[in-house]
Amino acid sequence: MRELKCEEDTWAWEQFGHAALGDSRRTDRVVRMAAWAAQSPGGKISQVFEGASERQGAYDLLETHHVSVAALSSALGAAAAERAAHDTFAFAAVDGSSLTLTDRTQSKDFGSLGALIHHVRGLKVIRTLACSPEGVPLGLLSQAWWA
Image: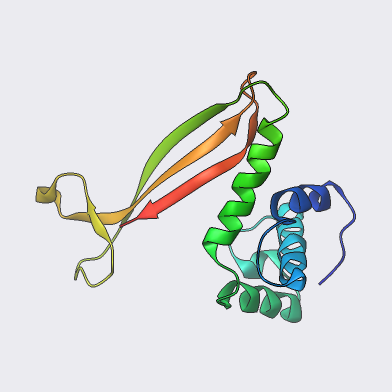
């Protein structure tokens, strides 16, 4: 994976550098992947990582049981809380969303959204964003998904 020496590196280290992934090499790879994604944002791994080996490394890391959403989310929350600790207080802005998904056969593990009469299925998400006293976003404190 290509080395980055820019503000994306700093941001990625602040966000994920203390992620508890059981091996410092995994944490280093997550940091490098996040920095690269920040520099070349895309909606898919194939849009962020151009080289075949970079792409395969990203897939392998995200598919291993050693890297969990909980561990990455915890690292993000800790980074946001650390930034918030520099002020006398911080706001915790809570927001929720629904993601509607087509599931005509109801074979996917999605839950009901809205009134049951409409037969709409999907996912719910609630996130908490830390904000400074001036309203500047400091980072994602937590996020929860459910069906």
